[in-house]
Image 1 (spheres, protein in one colour):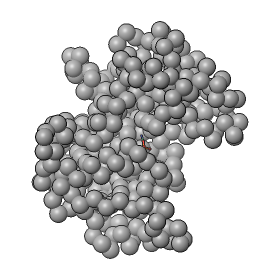
Image 2 (cartoon, rainbow, N blue to C red):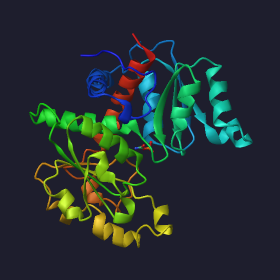
Image 3 (cartoon, rainbow, N blue to C red):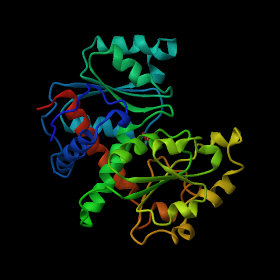
Length: 313
Ligand code: CP
């Protein structure tokens, strides 16, 4: 059993070992207990500074990193790129080096370019955490998804996630959430299927160790977990699917399609959702949905990651 992560950074689940994933999930369990207290604060990261550097919009990830840092008593600074010197043309490298000159312990970065977190991790001494980069990875989302699945299954008496059937449905090609989940779930021994329009499924994705079903009903049948992905509406303008209505009819999850699912299926979505497009409102808010549990658990998982990477007490 290990007690620390081997890298100073978290760039992707591709780089994590099974032991490291389990360490993060186990640490997040203790962190979740802190959030259930009346006084939701411990001194573990007192004196540490965390910078949230978001070049793309975010509700869940940015807020939960901020809450996670504050619950561990770190000082958390949010940089709004729209009011920073980035709008004056400052490069990512210069921005990162200038932030480092103020001695932070971690920089949490979201960027539209794949590889941006990896790039700054190589020029900064502090920890760099990928909060989503282009279509590359969103490792903390995958880890909170795993935590949420594990938490639910442990309540049902399961011991491990090995062999569990997961279907990820939607725009697989452009999804950093899908990629991070596939890497992490394969390491956990889970059985991953992807489904969606063939124009939104990468050629050769089977090489990542997943099955492909273009018929969503087949992907739903027998799945223990269904993860619906947000359809990025701008993809339609590029002709990657005919219309929102047709996408919803063929690939959206609704009560009718759910009739093909297992009785105790778990439904997840990383958010933000297009209600009525990839998921109907009644399914999103229904008895099988763990969508808000994912958000709750995002705080615990990010607390665990900040704690493990910045060497808190
Ligand atoms: N799941 C997710 O990354 O949500 P945000 O874009 O709101 O952070």
